[in-house]
Image 1 (tube, rainbow over the protein chains, first blue to last red):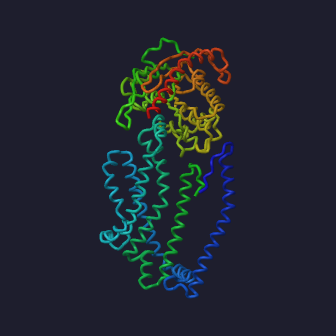
Image 2 (spheres, rainbow over the protein chains, first blue to last red):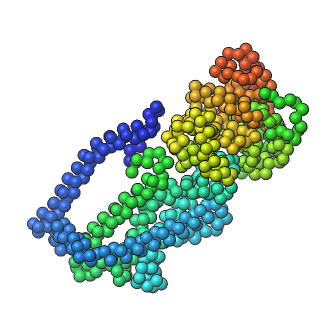
Image 3 (spheres, chains in turn blue, cyan):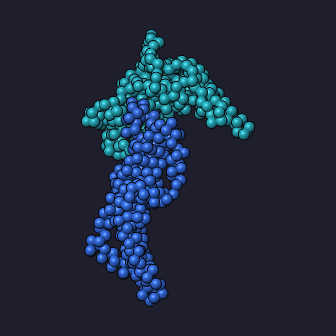
Length: 279
Length: 279
C-alpha cells in the first residue's frame, strides 16, 4: 500500500521503477518472514498434536490434512463438488452484478426512483441475509438455484450501493465539460458516468466475488446434494475433521486464485488510475 | 483586430441583457450572486472580466455557456436565445476537466467523436492539434501522468478542436506557475489571432487581462455585483506578452484600471472582515 507523492521532473515510468525496486527488496524479506512464520505455526501444531497435548480428533495434524487434500484431489472426489460450487458462485455473481449495475445507474440518474425505492432497499439490506437461505431452499429446492438466489442477495446490494455512489459522486466539472463538448445523455453515460462508476464497482469486486462464493458454500452447507459446502457437511456428519479442514483448505486456495484473476482484470481496466501499483 | 462598430446588435457572439442570478442558500434564504449584468461580445473580440473573489465571475460565464440559467434577464448567442447548453461555445474550466480514464488523444478527440466524426478522422485531426499545442509525443499518456501545464495544453486542444465560435475561459491558467502561465498566454494569443473567435476570459489577475484583451470589464464587490467599469485596451497587436509589462501604454492602462479595481477589492475585504467580526 505504498503511495508515493508525485515528484516533479521525474517521469512516471522512472518513478515506478524506483518504487518497484524498493518494494521488491523489502518484499523478499517479508516473504521470508511469512514463510518462517508458517513453518513455526504448522510445525508447533504438528508437534503438539503428535505429543498428545492437543487432541488430533478436533485439530487433525497438518500432515494428515494435506494427505486428505491430496486424496480428494488425486481421486477426483472434490472436482465435481468444486464445479457445482463454482457454477453457483458465477451465476450468483453475474445476475447480482448485472441487476445491481442496472438498478444503480437507473436510480442514480432518475432522482424520483431513488427516493421511491430508498426505504425498501434499506430494509432488505438491513436483513441478515443468512436467514433467507431456508426460505430459498423451500422455494428453489436443493439444486443450484437456491444457492444462486442466496448469493444474488449478497452480491446485488454491494454492487448496487457502489454503483449508486459511483454515479452520484462524478465530478460536476467533468460532466459540464462533456456537455459543453456536445455530449447527449447517452454519451454522458458512456464517456463519463460508466467509467467513473467502474472505479467504485471494481473496488467492490473483491468483496462481491468473495460473497458469491460464500453464498454458494453456506447455501450448500444448509441443504444440498453436491458442492464443496455439501462435502464439508458430509465430512462433519461422520466426524471426519480432516475432511472438514481439507474442504476449507481447498476453498481457500480457489478463492485466492480467483482473487488473483480479479486483480489482473482490475489492473487492466483501471490502468488510467494513478498509483495502480499499490495493491 | 477589433471589429468595426457597425455590427448589427443581433450578431453579438455573446449578449447578456440585465441578467441577475440568485441562489438559494441551504438556510432557505436567497443570495444574489450577480445583478443586472449587461455583456456584449462581438465576434472576434477578446473580452476579459476581472473582479475580486466572490464577485460572481464564474456565474456570468456559466450563464453565457448555458450551464446556469439567469433568474431574470436574457442570454443570447448570435441573436438566438440560449436554451440548454450553448452549442457554439467551448469552455475551459479552472479545474482539471480532462476525463482521467481517457488518454490525451482520446480526450482531445472527444468532441469530434461525440459529434459523429469517424475515429480515424477524429484521431488525425487530434494529432494535428496535439502538434499545435506541443503535445504530440504524449498522445497515449493519461492525464495523471502529465504536469499541470501539459494538462492545460491538452485542455486547450480539447476546447479548440470542435472549432467553436466562442471560447469561454474561467481562470484557465490560474493553477500554473508564473513562467508556464506566460508561455501559455502567449500561445493562446497566437491561436486566437488567426481564428476570429470571440473569447470571454475570466481572471482575477489584472496584468493578464490587460495583456490579452481588447476590452476589460471590472466587476464590483459581491454579493449582487455588477459591471462597474469597462476599458478599451488599444495596445496594438500582435503583442509579445513577455515584454508587454514594460510597455508605457500597458503601464498607464494598468494604473487607471487598478485605481477602479482597488476600490472593489478593498470593499470585498472590508465586508469579509465585518462578517468575521459579527460572527
